[in-house]
Image: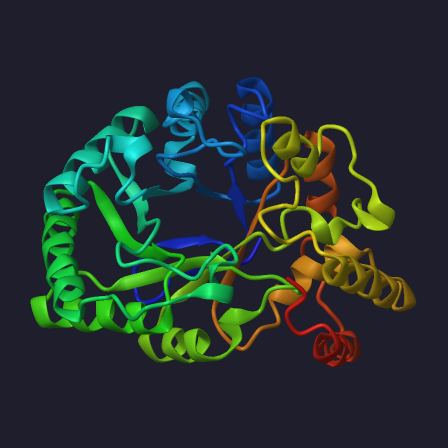
Length: 352
């Protein structure tokens, strides 16, 4: 598999990343270990997790479990030197750390806790999961209101956290830094502050990106290109929506929507499952079929055609789903299909 470098860092990873957010909830530990074995055999060496995982739902009693499962796999397989591990600090969270402030001290403690659960001496990419000032991710863009933000408070926070992250990198605990669910303004300010303090710059930004959700394409893409930051694209299949399994009103047993509803959620895939999104998904699948492509394979291959650095994060609750994803990797998307996708996007610009 092709290798790429994260932003301006020296961290080289596989061009596809394996997400692990269901490990310990929908995906039991043994299945998670088997998936990591299978992914590594296919050339995927880059694996992403977070201290708050598993999700769907997030529960206080399972926080940190996914990191523990990944750490157990590293210890069992002795593959640490063959893989790159990314994880995230949640930020201010009543559930994760009882509302403790998200400051430099909290970051330092969180890094040590993640290292212990992961059973390793280093984290290849350490990411800030959520901006403390708020975010428009997860459908919050429809009512986003930044008017109460304090620029100086934000800059002071960035300086404090970057100090702790710089110390951690000097100690060899982390290799590169990243953000998640950030905006163009936030990314630019993190980079500016790092330059001002001679601290490590952001190498990656993990935001949602798919055929159905392309908010990244404009201001964020421009900022990332000019600041040399790689997009780690989460939910490239729109939480399973782009597989087509929800078409016609179907809610397959064991699916993310079914599990969410069974555990008290709305079952709408975090606001993604709308009539417009179902219609768009069906249109993309028809387009793929017309060109002799599998819809899932097209959705992932398309990401690698974008005019900016991007590493799609694929994930699966079951091995057969992962095998289906792996079967489509390495197949270049024809230019005529890429152009047809651009035309279809204009008909369904933001379906959720």
